[in-house]
Image 1 (cartoon, chains in turn blue, brown):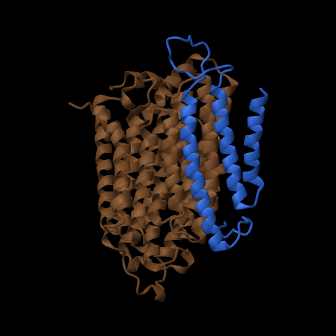
Image 2 (cartoon, each protein chain N blue to C red):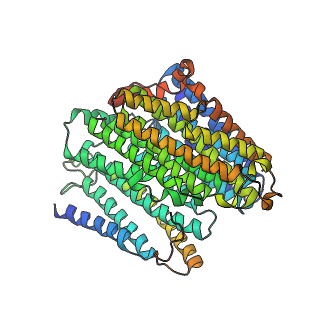
Length: 112
Length: 501
């Protein structure tokens, strides 16, 4: 149980970063942290205590298997996260070129 | 003999192929991006008409990817709602790609534009055909990532700022969706939506489902820009190049937000009165707040973006009513809104192309110089404001009648009020931009090139004759199958498992 709570805390850390921080880079880090928390949670959901890899073999009788599907899915979700992060960092670099700052309180030209 | 269900993966494959070809040879040969881009979207439009026809004649089609048996493998499903959304997406994609031939000349690297554009179309088509919840999430992310890049396409100050805001908010939305999917998977141990619906129907109600519903409303609400989650839309949609604004407002928020919302709430989880009133409240809030925010805007595209929020509210209200008439009205308004809002964004792009400004105060008397843009914009404005006989009138009328029939007079009242305010704000657009005194500084303004006119005129014609879709024969083909899918609710599972492979 404690591990799920820690995972929730990680997610909240990420959300806190996104909502409160003013620096663009810190916001991006917040997104990455929150994303990792969700991925971790997905893996935890599939984990069985004392489980083993779900490989079929004739010698060993399989009693307790880890669910392999979420592991495959998390790989996909990590790749998606990579794409989003890359794009965010690229945009952040361009923003720094144009505005000369990473502070979002100074990057506020769109209003209304 | 190839089974007819093989057309389903083509919707994703063809657009990905087009994007791939453009990205490898489009840089060398300048004519490649235009030709391949337009051919791809034309083929997709043709295929979606074929898909619609197949639905009517044969029934629901199912394609299992890699020939894995159904609940295990990824299923692609083509039913009435899917075919309806495919036609909407690909119709707008086609007219936008014709428009881009001329419009995108102003930007360098057209090939990058067409590559991202086709990726976005692939993502949207994928979301619509997918019958597997994680696969749906992957396609949703493909479309979203392409749209983040397209919003930042101009790489100027405003575009970058808007793109950053959009990307952050939309990624948070995606995280909530993924979390919701994790909870659903842990509860049902399956990812196939039909199978999931079966298992959920057997299990009794539980707190996990409430949690999932909250996560999905937040996630899809962020994607669809419903009111508490709308902050990114008025920045992101105006900042993108005009054809992309048309795509984003026209179809992206609908296929990523509304379609997915309906599919999961109606077909997988199953609708109940509480859920339906949450949807109606969210819809009414978006409808009213969106239009109030829109009326004070002076930037042409920003005004249109706020109206997107408002019109999305009508769609959600109609679908949330849950009565057959309400759902038909909601879906019909979804189609109509994608046509007239795309047209309005293309108009705003044409005005910007010719005059270089988006500020309504600086325009005036443009209809004399740009008759096609002016007339099509008038048609679209009357459609969105709900003036008979244009298409927007019929769908709004149906939604209001449905609300009255369902004895929800309060909602009907707000719908009428929002419609009147819409009319007021478009009267303002028409007065300041196209009518009024011709200004001297615009005496040199010329009408836009032929391709842009062609795209605008096509959409305007659809606006004018849109009401025809309600005639019972055409309605049976176009709207009825789509609304039936939502009305069947969780029977979706049986239909998918019995579908023609």
